[in-house]
Length: 195
Image 1 (cartoon, one colour):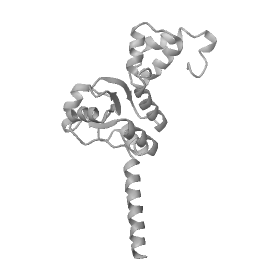
Image 2 (tube, one colour; image 1 turned 90 degrees about the vertical axis):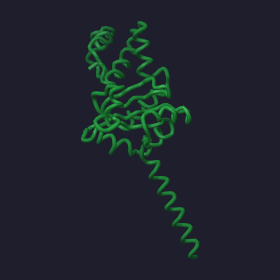
Image 3 (tube, rainbow, N blue to C red; image 1 turned 30 degrees about the vertical axis):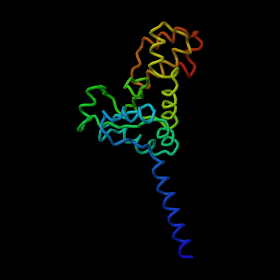
Image 4 (cartoon, rainbow, N blue to C red; image 1 turned 135 degrees about the vertical axis):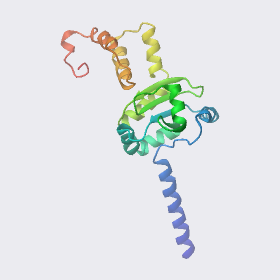
């Protein structure tokens, strides 16, 4: 009986430890230069989270989103996650490469360091996961949309989606918005998607 109780306690504690490790996003605690080697070795893209101490949006993401089991599982399964405090230690030098001004910021990149998707600000768990999914689909990334736009794509649905991606990356300008709005008939301008 005593052995059975010891085994049950061991199994329960193992389960709790396993659950707690999987219930938050695992940010790798390595040097910036090593993250790309790890990504190559594990054959995963990278998500870099830029933050600083006291950032309200950062605290919101850390408290409400990074600890969400669904977000944690998705990001831990699909990305090498890395965080950079842009105002401390090595983070100051790292930010000279990326030039992040707005926080929190999330850069999605390949193991060579090419940024294919980006978002800035605090997001819901659903939106955070969706941006992660977008970054994994080569036809849904911000860089893909920028290339399509540069190549002359001015389709209304494309411009609308591109506007939202630019907004989420804090890069939206009035030119893209006006190009989209010019594709809409007058009676469509008052609809929620256009407001």
